[in-house]
Length: 197
Image (cartoon, rainbow, N blue to C red; front, side, top):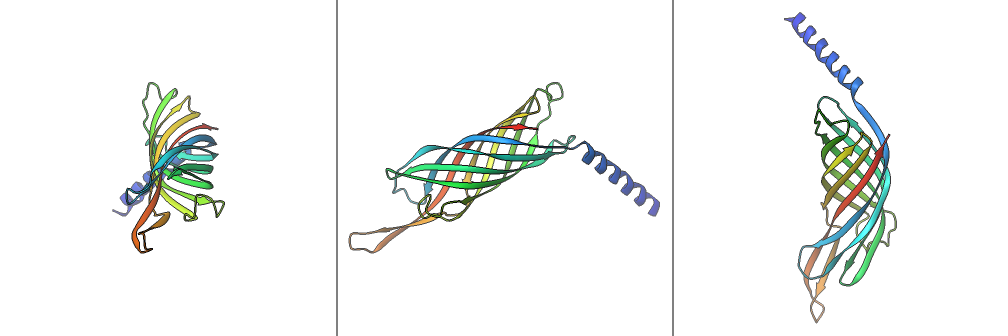
């Protein structure tokens, strides 16, 4: 029994080592655009989409047989939106960490590989006065899809769901009494292109 456990453990270790040796680690540069829309807990303010930009570095680690891995990016992001006719914008450092699954299609995987990703996203405000008086740290959850072309170019599209309330707006009646507390979350689309080395 003890010998069987040792043999099984040795085989498992050899398999894991082999997978690690074949695993693909890559890094690259990533650029893109985001379309920001704040969401309010009450329908009292008009918001309009505005286009921002994002650029930075990304790294990924993919296990070859499974196609499962992770990517981590460090991005400068400029976000802008319009709330009640007033432009609101800000500069952020954004750190998304994604679980990624590349769908390997044997005949064409060296030319095109679709992938899906999901995971948390932290955006840290660089200018305290930017984006109104919102929180300095904004948490989101990303969900997206993409294509990897010729094993280097990755084009992805994702949506970030705001997880924490980044602001609270108090609404007053004509005599100054608080009538509503309106909670604000930041949701946005992002389209990116990355070149992996």
